[in-house]
Amino acid sequence: MPLTPEAAEELHELTTRLRGGLKQYPDFPKPGILFEDILPIFATPSLHDALLRALEIHITAQHPPTLTPPFAGVDVVVGLEARGFLFGPSLALRLGAAFVPVRKAGKLPGECVKVGYQKEYGEDFFEMQRGAIKEGSRVVIVDDIIATGGSAEAAEMLVTMCGGTVVEFCFLMELGFLKGRSKLTAPVYTLLTGQE
Ligand SMILES: O=P(O)(O)OC[C@H]1O[C@H](OP(=O)(O)OP(=O)(O)O)[C@H](O)[C@@H]1O
Ligand SMILES: Nc1ncnc2[nH]cnc12
Image (tube, rainbow, N blue to C red; front, side, top):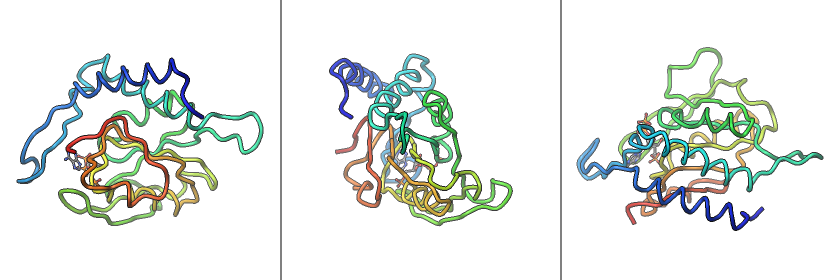
């Protein structure tokens, strides 16, 4: 569903403010990487709120709950360790959805599904608890940044392995030159683009 003009204006104002909350660090964590630090946003309550509000505006317009089947809406917000944990749970609460974490390997108890992946500056393994998502759940995957898309692609695989459907990916920022969205099956929404 398209945004109302009022919501579009509010979203524009929020994203403009959010851009001012990012800080860049050259050659971190490796030479040649320009690191986008999102932590200043969480050090400023008004920016922290702006991030949650911006994603809430987008997601509620894009996935409105309906009173009749298929009921649409969002059942689960999946956040990726670690920075997806900073706003995923609060966003889930605003949407009336569950929050489920995707963690780096070896951190979650019980039966887990596991996928290996490559990211902009290394490689890793992600896990999710097998029973965390009910069959047929509508899932939004959130993270701070999509760079190569390796992390997000691995998370989409885990959700699918658990029987969920990824209805959208939402990121604070996309590093457009790495074309990470091309790895993903579900639609991708980002509040900001960077390093064009
Ligand atoms: O699109 P990609 O190339 O996969 O890169 C994006 C991922 O890299 C960063 O996480 P990182 O693995 O550094 O973990 P952290 O949040 O624990 O620092 C970032 O938070 C994303 O999850
Ligand atoms: N350039 C970057 N800055 C911050 N987080 C990242 N994750 C992957 N690439 C990144």
